[in-house]
Length: 70
Image: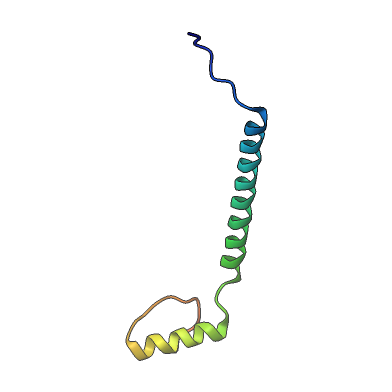
């Protein structure tokens, strides 16, 4: 019996490395896309509609828009 680690097929290792690179790239792209969407914010018209909905239901949320309340 030998205590040496099992030998792996070199193509299997390279496929694993390629898969890891793909996953890393996909993760970076998804994080960038999410950051871009978050930076866009809520359009004024949409924020106004949300405020109107909140007023009609009695709920209060911070949409980043302005309200008519003083």
